[in-house]
Amino acid sequence: MSNKTSNLFYQSRAPRPFLDRAEGIYMYDQSGKRYIDGSSGAMVSNIGHSNPNVLEAMKAQMDKSTFGYRLHFRTEPSEDLASMVAERMPGNLDRVFFVSGGSEAVESAIKLARQYAITQGKSSRWKVISRFPSYHGSTFGALALTGYDPLARPFDPMMRDMPKIAAPACYLDRDNLTDEQRGLKYAELLRDEIIKQGPETVLAFIMEPIGGASTGALVAPDSYYGRIAEICKEFGILLIYDEVMTGVGRTGSFLAANHWDIEPDIVAMSKGFAAGYAPLGAVVARETMVEALLDAGGFLHGYTYAGNPLACAAGVAVLKEIDRLSLIDNCAAMGALLKSRLEGLMERYPFIGDVRGKGLLLAFELVSDKDSMTPLPKEYNCYLELVELAYERGLIIYSRRTRGGVEGDHFLVAPAMIVNESQIDEIMGILIESLDALAAKFDLPVNAS
Image (cartoon, rainbow, N blue to C red; front, side, top):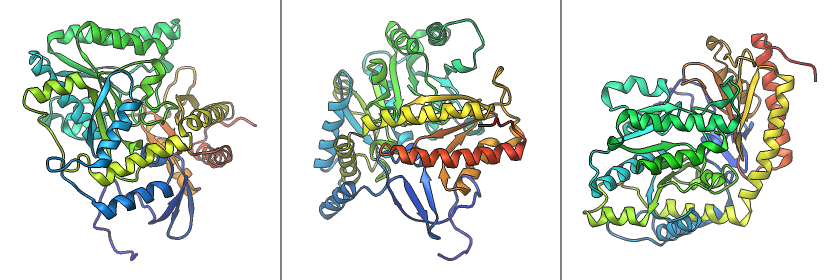
């Protein structure tokens, strides 16, 4: 490839080499340099790269058809995948609507919720409460729910922002409450906000069961989840779980909701759903909700590539590989190992203030003072610096600013669910080298090992 100026543009001018090939958890640029995909891209490549069984299934579908518009034909891959998803969902969540990505999934979920409310004679309900910080997507509907100022604030005049409550960042609290009490305290914020907004105007509450990029694998106390569900039920408000990042095994269960025996009213999924082999996502709801919409004239929503047979063939093959290789069990086991290894870094690096997450959705946060959890000076831009130091050494990790996008530094470490113990050793080795380099650059404390 020539070195001419690229016609492409994305978020920034950060220089990156050309990708040549990828296999398992490894990626190679055109010079032959190897990178460990320690974040599964953006927490997408859940079963690793270039899985031969998935590629074979996609090739077989390509020989039949690559596109069939949903208003003209049913397709076997989309029907098969919908059945496989329904079998894996909790309770009565059994109707599936396919999309191409996470923002589309969230957008579809809130539009489904609104239309269902109208069929129930509750047209006054339109407000969707979410959390701050949070991330739900970049389309205007999803962005109105997102609590991450750098991404949302420039567009304030162009969209209707939605009410927010504080995310359950209990690790920052300095009080005398137990974890159970803290969980209930944060859950009650929802009840307070519903009353403030007027219950007759509130349609739904949307939450990431385990935080994604905006909060860095934030897990609430166990008491939080059940109480949130109770509050939603009390006021007749729909509970939407954004499992775009957490779904399809990433946290050591098919849905993160399963860890707390929660049955949401609507679930949004994407990312690991087709594991990077094709753009694919889904919204899942109860039959009674969907039938109410269809009886009222149909779901007033749709995307050109919804239920694309090639994408759905990839999704079917991904789910089969997850089952065949027992990847959810491996995710739970390797996640526990990796988390313990990350926690072990806290003694060597006093500027690591917190390690959190579940399964292979893990993160650590850097601070200048562990007692107060004061962030490192934001002008250091450590959330970018450490990513670059690791990238130079052949490890890809994912970062964002922890405190609403304004300051703070957290890093997601989320390798594919196929990762093994020796590969975790590789990840940790490069991560330690990178943290040493960061400490040297900013004169951060390091304890002797």
